[in-house]
Length: 349
Ligand code: NAD
Ligand code: UD1
Image (tube, rainbow, N blue to C red; front, top):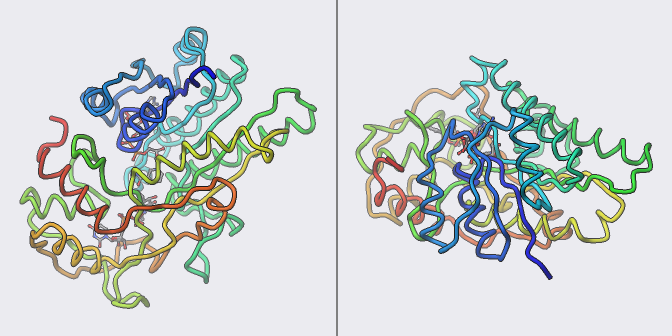
């Protein structure tokens, strides 16, 4: 069988670069489109160093329809993994138009280019942030959606668009229907075990793990633990942290599933990608200190607006239908995050 070619939008980013490594190592051809708005070309140089293979790179914005059409005309694309987008919750509240333009409009342009090229297999990076607040902390795919900020709403809108696009196939009795997987990520952390690629946030990180790593290496003075009065086992927030390599392997399983019975006549299906286990902020700090031998200076601070007490995945559907489950444990995630941080104190610079 000839190699499948996957177009990876946002392939130079944190998750995208790890996806490139796993796709190349699994025998796919990889084509990347990225505008480097939140990444550096160096990440793809590192992908080449790890795998001995290079993805084909197009520096372009997914909102540039002509650029996308040219890529589809030139490359023999079988499926698209769509990571490109803006992802900072706080920034999305300050710049909602920028977020909707980049994420929602960018996806529309991509879908039009795909439809014109008759490439109708798509894996989309959604987020657990699309779920509304629930009385149950373990989220399953059929829970009500109700994102609470512009970033989350951009993901929810894209999910709605993709469900509509798939539903239209049934009405139009399309002979080449869309096959779409929505992957709702919980909290991706960690890095490739080589320590050569990892998360390289701009400025002061918002997310817990990059913050902890930068305190441990001395770039930041002190971590604020946002609240210790939540109804959780130690009062701090509980999340489902998942190793980024496990996460991207879920995408490869999703590509395989598109060939299966459930997608035969077209479908748009959502799956959680999480471990099913939650850890508190204090558990993360304690385990990080144990695994790395580095102290993490922290203080207890007031709650952060918009945070939930506890949120973790029910990953049963991904196991049943994608045959995927997370394999790495918290020690692996934190050791790998630290290897990346300590080998690259200035990120890719
Ligand atoms: P990232 O910022 O590291 O990667 C996104 C990549 O997309 C970057 O390389 C950026 O330059 C590129 N990009 C952005 N807008 C673009 C555009 N208009 N045209 C071309 N390229 C563009 O982010 P990430 O952490 O790798 O996240 C990847 C995807 O997963 C995003 O869609 C994000 O919303 C989603 N997601 C991430 C997390 C997380 O915690 N990291 C959680 C849930 C969902
Ligand atoms: C955040 C986003 C969410 C996004 C996700 C993945 C918010 C409100 N939510 O989720 O939309 O999908 O990142 O990128 O921003 N914490 C601290 N101190 C810190 C940072 C975090 O105590 O400096 C705590 C938080 O209160 C939370 C946990 O650590 O309990 C994890 O935080 P974070 O990494 O930001 O992820 P989420 O809040 O789950």
